[in-house]
Figure 1 (tube, one colour):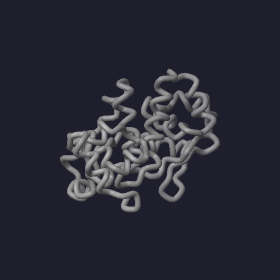
Figure 2 (cartoon, one colour; figure 1 turned 180 degrees about the vertical axis):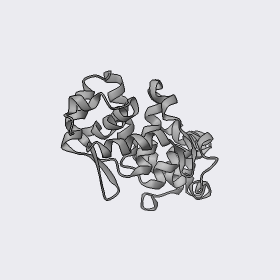
Figure 3 (cartoon, helix red, strand yellow; figure 1 turned 90 degrees about the vertical axis):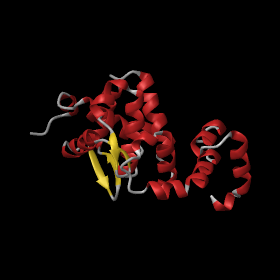
Figure 4 (cartoon, one colour; figure 1 turned 45 degrees about the horizontal axis):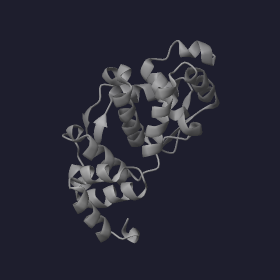
Length: 195
């Protein structure tokens, strides 16, 4: 039995709906891979408190990880709302129709936050993504297999985030673990071609 979008919504959990809205945000732009999906969902769950506990993020091998968020993505694939193309996740036509219906049910501040988090992270390099998340939420790095590598690349990746206007000067200095003056000195030491 193939349910239409309105009927299907009754079967979707809150996490399923948030995952669908994440994929719907920014003109249905695909989410690049599971790493990006997890980190974008993590930021969303820290903003939308109603789903924070349900998301149950824990320190994982690559930073914050949520099994419930992963299950939601698999649910959406099984309902033929999302498809995986190469490593990216994108909405199907049925997924777009369902997301549009859910979009009308959600407060605009949540939709804007989801779009902002997706815009913030989705076009970063993997190293920049990990640097942002690891140094913003260091309490989720305890189980990480790659923490040492992320630390080694910390300064150039934080500088790249700053130069892309993803973070403010104060946030960049904080993520780099230095004062603003010291960060500005480091900024001068890294010419554009090295980023």
